[in-house]
Length: 417
Image 1 (spheres, one colour):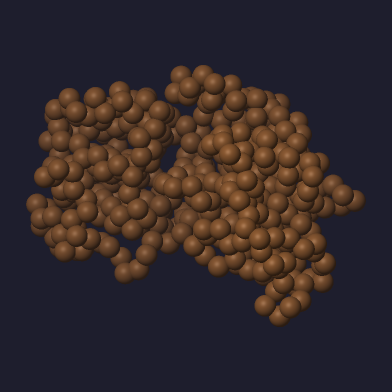
Image 2 (image 1 turned 135 degrees about the horizontal axis):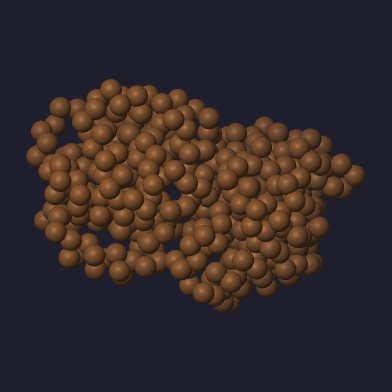
């Protein structure tokens, strides 16, 4: 079977939620033995230089006996090996926009694969009848004020269109599936839930035991990269990692931190790590006029992210809405207690490894943090529950379940699982 994938998001930098999903999914599809009997076309914006027709290293067709038409092959910029049955197709397009709806749509008209997989929500207007789309969340329906108007309109249209047109929708959580049914009348038989995965932090662990609270955490370890001006990340600290934008409830985190400093006099720093998002200018002004020190690091690399998580006292993620909530799992896998919201997919994803709060109640957020600081038994219980919770998730499992949906046909139709 020939499976086309819109792979553009996998190579975008920096990688956040959807980009990480696309990257990890493709990477782990290449590792599945059962994927070897299929041909995968990875569509990317760009231009294909002349290439010889692909053959495997043995000169034979891929395992499984399928015969595939000759296709131009380039490797693109993937930083993991692509087996011979994964072909990068770079589709030339002169504009920085409309690549999906014009160039990819044209490719679907003239050279459609047997199934098209869109991991990034937006289905091209022209597409094979056997198309599968992943929907990552419906934040824009609940918090429309945090989205530019045209973007909001486009998301609403594309979601309705996908639900009507595709054979299958992949929802990244049960909550997202229920939202699609409730808000758009989605056909439950067409929607499958496939959770994201989680990768293990690098070894050896970055955690440093026995450091003085006022000593620089990362001096001599990562060359002082965690600095903002003359300030450094120092233990103890509370940590948020994610896009710095209003829908992530950064303002609620700031207010909870003010309560913690004024009422409880905690010694902790507040560290915010992540790229700016919608409404960042307002957040930036609030931070600049904030009474207490807040360290903003901007986007951090994977190495920096794991180091920050490993050394944090508590991970704060009281978001207003999450389609999945991958940062919660990343915190749990490093043994950090989590405070997160009792809304959307977060209880489903966090399991018992978190304290849940009302995201609109900074007093409650502050009290949850204080409870963890004061109660070692509670802290240990949350850490252990987090370790157990993350065992439910893996990118290999995500890739295997996705491949089953893509290839599960009967008489030319995708079967209901």
